[in-house]
Image (cartoon, rainbow, N blue to C red):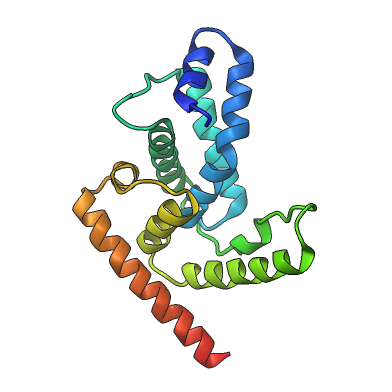
Amino acid sequence: MINGADIYIRFLNGDKEAFVELIREYKSGLLLFINTFVKNIHLSEEAADETFLKLYVDKPKYKSEYSFKTWLYTIGRNTALNYLKKNRFHSDSPIEDYFYISDNIDIEAEYIRSEQKMIVNNAMKALKKEYAQVLYLKYFEDLRSEDIAQIMDKSKRQISDLLYRAKQALKAELETRDNNG
């Protein structure tokens, strides 16, 4: 298992290749997380790049009481929110356009999974931003509630309640879409 904290410490100690490893390991997930509230893949990419630029230039101290991913996503969230305030730009770019299909997987099975992802992602776009964020962090990034609470700046209890309401909202949205289509 990749330990982002160790890689980051190597970077802080002068190993420039370690920074490339961080980007390779965490950029895609950070980008998709940021896109849950920016809703524009190009702006999300800029905010993710700016997050990594902050790490490279400012070299903030890693807070070891959280996992590295939690710490990084918190910086990414704050960067993206500042970016949104600065640019005041919102868009509804479809996230399903940015999932990549692996060539070594059964094409039919992958197509079905891809369709399911598209349905879920389209339904998630219809949810409140907080609902989409908590669902993404829990089920796409597989983070613990404590980590999600840190990233979203909420208590663990608030995350538990938010996750429950988000799942209910997603279920209702999927049922509505199923009945209409």
